[in-house]
Image 1: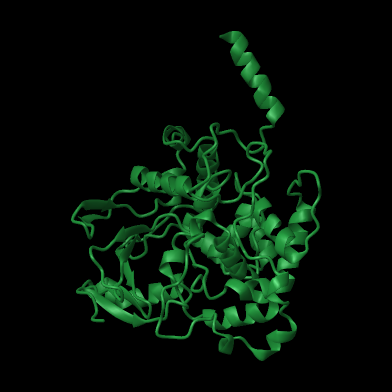
Image 2 (image 1 turned 120 degrees about the horizontal axis):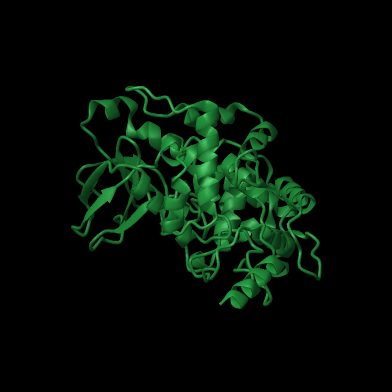
Length: 415
């Protein structure tokens, strides 16, 4: 097909990058996904937009090609949209080879690799990634997306307003820097926007960063000093970087590990919550208790070690594919056909895998895990799907059920 007007073509099979999956599976929450009018079967059917400090990134995709915008701005020409794309999507990593390696290691993975191809780990801005996953506590993807978008529109000046494919005018805001969220009045404003107890976490984390590392910028480089310090954590080893992240308010092991994996280049890290634990129990032989299982540090470490042993150096990447495959919103997902062979082809699976793979009849099909009938509020800190019902209360995760009952009784007596 011909290249859309105003775009440049980058040959890239969809099995190497599927925007429809990667940008909707709970890694990043600021991409706008806009349907294109009357696309042909081989043409892109959506446009994906993302607002940076200096530009609006617009992407389209066909089964064999990624389309990105041309620019006449000299400053952007020097840096190049291709440089940003290669860095953000980590295109230097051969995802097809990783899928073959995981299929050789893991019989469960080999069963659904063709259907869920193209899911790779983003390399996000650490500051945005940190705040986004502070918002993820006891939350679902749709609500986190709304929170992050409200955060941008309230605390970040608009970069531009432009037409969407259907002709409407939309205003785009970049992610606000730490200094914009460090003020004492920020938490009050965030509460009015529905952030609940997370409002204090965000404000105090921003304040800690700015106080410790500053907010200096230059005309040539608008990135604040505290943001640059977060980026330097990429050079730390995993344990050291995790230790620094755990110092921030609202950051526990799960949030810290999400940031390590999604923005600090720690590809081996597997973030663990009760949802991931259930996957490990159902498909990978982890022991389960008849009673409700709390996510203790010991259990967290056991699940992490188990999945790393199965998937190896890129265990965090493999985990994101299994996590996506288990989301209700992806129950009908499947890659469109591409000019290149898909990973489901037996010819693409090394012969050495034969001794590793079990007979198909012995492996349960991957399907959304059934939720336990009796659940205590806020027991699961995983990113739930859009189909999940939002909680009717917004208590911090360390507020016990007994404390909340006592509070309701006091309120009732006062009334």
